[in-house]
Structures are given as C-alpha cells and as structure tokens.
Image (spheres, helix red, strand yellow):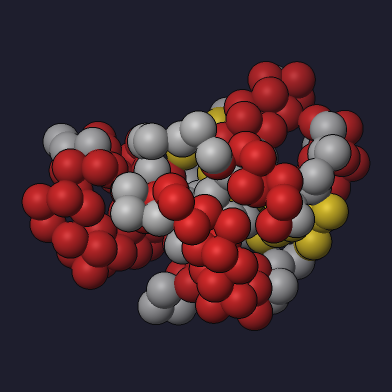
Length: 164
C-alpha cells in the first residue's frame, strides 16, 4: 500500500517523506509536483490564474488517476484530505499518516515562506491564519490511520510506522 503523509503546510511532509523514502530505498512522490506535471503550471500560477476551486479539482483528478504503487511515500498538499472525499479515497488505497505540528512550530517554520499561495495575503497574521486553518482542517486530518506528534519528528518515527 502507498503511504500518504498529511498535515498542515509546514508540517514536514515533503522533507520527511523524501528523507524516509531515501533511507528505506523506496519511491517518493509529491502530489503538488504531480499536479505541476499534469498542468504545466506551478502551484502559485494555478492559484493566481485559475483559482483555488480549479486547483482543488485538478488535485482530486491527479489523486484519483495516478497509479500509486505499494511501498511509495506520497506527500500531499495541506488541503488535500479536506476537499471532496480525498481522505476516504487515500485510506481506501493506502495508509494515511497525519504529521501533527503545534501552531507555534508551524508559525516558526512558515514565517519566512513566500512560496505558498495560501499565505500570500496572510503573512502579517500568520499565527491567526494557522489557528483558523487548523480549526477547519483538524477533523479531516484526525481521520488518519496514524497521528504522529511532529514538532520534533525524525525519519525513524515514520520508518517505525511504515516498517517495510
């Protein structure tokens, strides 16, 4: 089964996913990178030119149509499990792992980021944005097969869950 890493932006899905996949010598995929390949546009361009609704529909289409293989780690977007029935779908075909990071740690990790489309207008109120965003998404994240407290997570924590 594939392993889907879920969590708020800045939770370490891509960074931990790449490192863990490398250590385990298994494939790593980033859903955002698959969307870029599918559309020929960056995530920022998609949000700016087509809007979030278009992005979410494209995200769902790529998620549903990509042939994910067993023993692959996939980093999802922060909103992926929160739209349509994406989380249920990921649980049907694989294992979902929620990287749960505290608001303060997320704010520290994201404060210098200018690459994330949902942060473009929220930098001045980053802490409040994270609280509001998490309050909307936490119930979706919490449906994951595994919930890992991730302020100080290591690749060993993910390896112990995957146990290939």
